[in-house]
Image 1 (cartoon, rainbow, N blue to C red):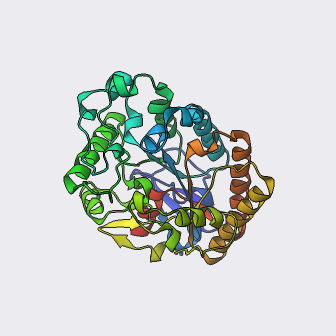
Image 2 (spheres, rainbow, N blue to C red):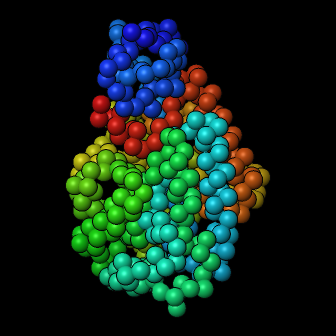
Image 3 (tube, rainbow, N blue to C red):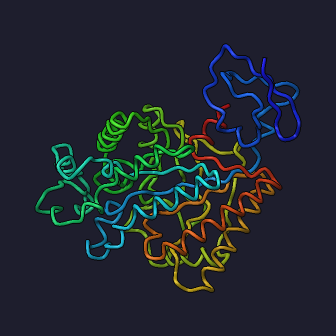
Length: 373
């Protein structure tokens, strides 16, 4: 019989015959004295759940490259996106250094092996949006042949994410599908979902979390995802500036208020304890709290941005709630070094909050698993 102590000196016993599946949610607060052939963890006198998880720091990233803007930006306007692999590598290195558990919501098109695979029959039929430009299909040599493959493909980054501990590869739909736009039906989403499942099988990976493109959450889509055994989604930040809407209804005022809110306290950031997170169509809603805006190049604005995020992190840690920060990896491309330094500052701050308040880092699937336990 082996035994384990956590940092508070509470004793836990280990029973060798049964295989232990995962200690991810708890291993940051447990020190192993014996690790040979250890198996199922039994605990005495105290519940692991109440002892281990208090406030939660959740990071999700929308990994999409050109597919996230194909309908609103010209190729020459997104040349910086060819540097996204370097941004992903830099972010992953930081996450490894600071033991950050993160969710990478990935557009399935990035998972194609090469241009030949990308231009295959599965990507030939247009999605029936009323506004035709929203569909990335058909993908053809005439339309996409002259585009740098680094803008269209991300298999290398996907494998890096999958190969790093505590990183969750999640869905950002296969085609960067807009669920609230006119012309889209449940059938269209089901087909997109099937393509994502096929990619998962190819990668030997099961997707269980989703971030909806342009944050267009759809109850019909959630019902389909529930049937596909998804467990969590990132809901919108709960204020009027992030309210669910079609892209054409996104007013200039609404967008401007979102920008200003990153630097000034224009709106409140509502947070929830894990036990209070709501489910919709069977999936746990882990709402966003803050979009980490790209570096502005203006020092005074960046100071305000970081202070605003830190204040919100502190509030979540003190009140034992979930704080959900998100961004796009390609947002870092223009000011990569400065952006990496900013994230490192926030991750170092999370470590301080973890030591003082038990502010743990969990990805979306881990939060869903913990809420279910």
